[in-house]
Image (cartoon, rainbow, N blue to C red):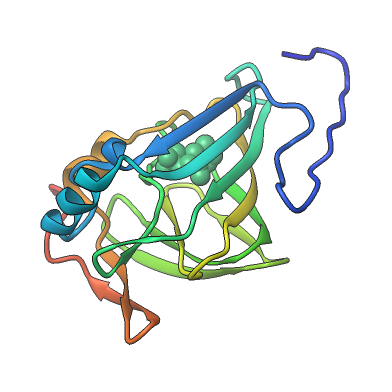
Length: 194
Ligand code: 6PG
Ligand code: NI
């Protein structure tokens, strides 16, 4: 981790940062229980543990005042009618926001508060999304063959709470209906306990 001021490049077409500290690869098997169509998940998994998305992290001390940042690349594909997506998470410190800048692609960001309020924002090249504090977030690639590439930045002390989403899911899903993304209710969503 660098202590002096530093710069790095994000060059197309690959968008892999010229300097990064950590490279995360999420495969289909890492997403067990996350996709709506369990049969389709099993069928695709048996054909091979596909790489769904990658994250290139610029690590910083996980303290207030620092800003963690990096590149997330969601590859194109579908599991049943559902598009390739990230796990999704709340920040452990709920009162922490996040900014996403879409460098390439077409997607949707599904978001939700602990109270169950929901929002879905379109992601497209050149677009900036502000995810306010308290909103869990999952990015979804709705393009048929192009990577969804985003630069993200969030507070160093945020942390990641995946457990809540793994348990209750997101209230909304984005499914491909006649080739177009459609927002639908998640039949498996478990409302937050009061
Ligand atoms: C974060 C960011 C972002 C996110 C990736 C992968 O808080 O770190 O939201 O970097 O981690 O988009 O998504 P998952 O963390 O949900 O797998
Ligand atoms: Ni986040």
